[in-house]
Length: 487
Ligand SMILES: [Zn+2]
Ligand SMILES: [Zn+2]
Image (cartoon, rainbow, N blue to C red):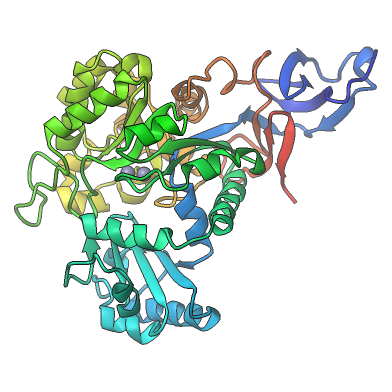
């Protein structure tokens, strides 16, 4: 038999229930073969997986990879216990940087600090006196700047030390726009590496300022083949003509219908526990009606961030009235707080909830953060994976990385171990939301998302079944190429 350069066999992997081999040509699975393979295949290049467990290459359908990559080279505040520790880390970073460089700090959760508050600007100045510092809250919906950074942003019209809403956006936008093309591409390279290490072959990623600009969308679109992992791009903007000019087939991402539970800006129908606030709807019904109908007229798949029930209903009501919602697979990003009635309404609109199992892992449960903000009763109707699936709605999984970790195994386990037993997914369902359903969201259900003849050879391979705590990622294979191998 003639040996083609591109043709090879993967042996001895548990690709389904049992061990067998895959014959791959030019990145496509062309045959399932037994293990060991028949004599005529013996001369083909072979890669032995030693009985490891193979899954279709995992796809994370919602990330902010640019920020994730950029901040990973900055100061991680996820483990700090008090303000002194925050300042100590910032001081150490300050000592490493030149005057022109910006210091990015992220993952700060003030509710986990002993003081239960953000640092003051004065405290930040004591650690970073003469360089720009941007410090983001874990959910990205609030941030802080030191005095040096505040002076650089002319449009900043507030005395508030913690910036939220439009001020938060303005501050973040300013510092992201100071970067060179090389620095931007480098941020994506870092995130591609972290994505592979997390077991992913593809990441849906948001690019744009969530207002009028699609920022560096075209730069990344033109450099897609430079990355070892596949990025699926969302022009995260309200600018329909810019998205169309850039050749996008979708628009949106975390363009905000509301804010977050942490910042008490998620729009909910009953007030938060501590006070009268019901959060914020950032735009009017008319605004969304105009934007979504215009985008769908141009056949753009629309994605909108909506966390609270009021915001989800606002967007879903528009989706319900747009006949193309089903055909375009329009997205409800996060879709966190939903009672049964709202789930029924989503089943009618045929919109796609793009959901985050890690949110429940981090903030669910009777003593969790959601229960503190909303009370136990409402915390139990958050992130309702199982109920939503049972209603016949297709959902997909995403991490919202940088907000939560980029790790397929952790996310899938979060979905099967939901704090609320009624919302737990089976292992197969949990895998599907990161494979089959995720491929479907990108209109690629016939070429990826399954280990099947005729499909791309995209595989995430683990030492043991995913639900086993000690399982380790061994390989990530994208279109037949080994992009990650455990050392
Ligand atoms: Zn969001
Ligand atoms: Zn997001």
